[in-house]
Image (cartoon, rainbow, N blue to C red; front, side, top):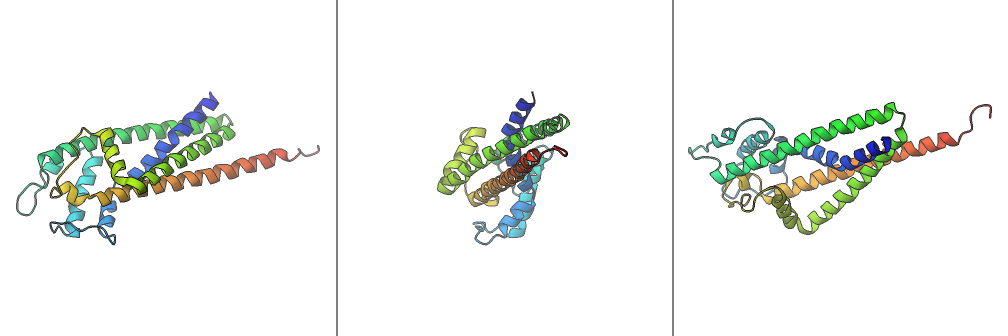
Length: 229
């Protein structure tokens, strides 16, 4: 049972680290910083940075709160026209469903991971805990490194594949004049993918270093003869 729990922990770790990175950037602060990044494309229709910050904050908050789609549907441009069209609103409903499902699974994995960790510590199976974390961290490095390489080689293909996995064909394609594209152009998502991947990679490598050091320390202690031997 203890070995099985360590395996479960290792398998869940890549998802836990990845979703932690996703949740960290899923705040209004991330797009606000992106708009001020040197080289980030300006809105082709003249939307200012301050306007982009304000409108994007509503979009990000909608994805993480419990509000209905009216939260976005009621937004208006200064001229009285709707901020989002029907297709954009339907897509945001789909995105929110995916986000909430992913976060729920993340919370469950965090709970299971904590329970597994606590159980192994109580059972004095710290070596199994370290092995599970170390294996999961290496699995994270392999998966995320492959994703980052794919991102650098062909991000457009990665972006399309990601959407095809979660959304129906045609529901996530918009015109350059649509608000979602103006607020979140392709460069925004490229940076988001890269930052989440980098966070996951660095976190996994840190866990590898920590668990490796502890395992080495434990081995040294075991080689020391008992007092009075």
